[in-house]
Image 1 (spheres, protein in one colour):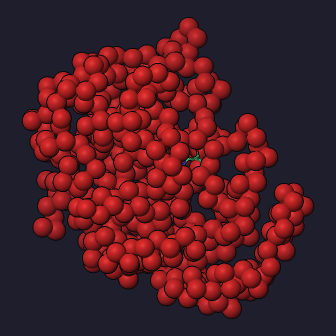
Image 2 (tube, rainbow, N blue to C red; image 1 turned 90 degrees about the horizontal axis):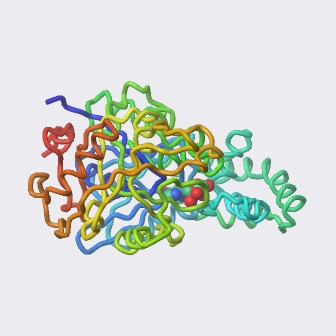
Image 3 (spheres, rainbow, N blue to C red; image 1 turned 135 degrees about the horizontal axis):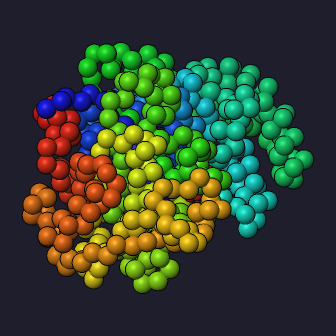
Length: 439
Ligand code: IMP
C-alpha cells in the first residue's frame, strides 16, 4: 500500500463538519500539524477521554506531546486570544512548547474586531453573519498592505513602530466612518505587551520548517478550517469567510509546493449544517431539521449560535470534491441519523423547469434551487459502539454506499461519536498507512 506522508484535511460543506475530531484522530499519528488559513473564527472541539478542548487557533495536534504545531502564513492570528488558548491548555497540563507561528502570518488586532462588528451593523439585513472575530478586516488589511505580520512580534519596538505607522489610518476609519472612539498607541502597546513577550519566541520561518520536515519524510497534516462553501472564491459569495479554505491553500498558506500536499481528505457530515446567512438548498425548517439540531447538538463552538440543519446534499459534496481535488471522504456524525424513519440525499437541484447536477456559480441562481431527494430507509440501532463497517446495520451501510456513489469519492473514514475511539476506518483505506506508519 502507498505510504502517505502528507495529507490535507478540509471541510467539504459549510464548516462544522467535525474536522476537529477527524484531525485529532489523524494528528495523533502526525509529526507536524500545520494550519493554513482562517483564525479564531474556527472552533474545533476535541474530546479526549474526560477532557473536552475547545480550540480556535491552535491545531488539534497540540494534545499529542512531540507533535510540532504550526500556524501558517495564510492565517490571521489574534495574539490576545491565542495567549488565552495557550494559558487554558497549560492549566490543564498540556505542553504548548511545540507551537510555532509563521512570521508571515498576519495579526488580527482589536480594531479588526470592531470593524467587523461595525460593518455587520451597517449592512443591517444584508449582514454576512460573521463570527465577529475580525477575520474579514484582518485579511482586508493584509491585501491592502497595511497589516502587521507575526514577525513584528519578535521585538516589541518593531511591533510599536509598525503599529504607529498604521494606527492613524485605522483610527480615521474607525472614527470617521463608524463613530468609534479609536485607540491610543501607548494603551495598545500595553495591551499587547504580554502577548508579544509570550508569542515572540514562537515565531519562525514556517516554509523552511515544513520544507525540511517533508523532505525528511516526516508526516505532515495540513489542518483546514471552515469549509468549501465558505471559500472566498468558490463559496456562496458574499456569504463566505475571507480566506481560501480549499486543499490547494494548504500549499500557499504554508509556503510549500502543491506536489508536497499528497492527499486531500474532505470531512463531510452525513447531513448538512450552516451558520450565518446565505442560501442553503437542503435546509429543513420542519421536524427533521429540528431533530438533527437536537440530536447532533448543532450549536456553534465559537459563537453558540444554533446551526441551520438539513439533509445530505451530494450536489455540494461533488462540487467540494472538484474544487479540492478530494482523494477521500471522512463521513462524520453517522450516529446522529440513528432513529430517523427515513433519510434523504439530495442528488440534484430543480431550478425552475430544469434539473441541475452541478453547483451554480451565483447565489441568485442557488436561491431558486430546490433539492431533488432520494429517500432511504433509516435504522434504529445505536451505532456509537460499532468499530467496523461490516457491523453497521444494513440500512446504514446502504446509506453510506449511496453517499459514496453520489459524490464519486471513496469513504476512507466514518465517525460514529465524538471520541477518538468512535472511528471506523474504511476497507483498504489509504489512511491505514497513515495510521500504521508510526505505530
Ligand atoms: P467570518 O469568517 O467570521 O468572517 O464569517 C463569515 C462566514 O463564515 C459566516 O457565515 C460564519 O458563520 C462562517 N464561519 C466562519 N468560521 C466558521 C466555522 O469555523 N464554522 C462554520 N462557519 C464559519
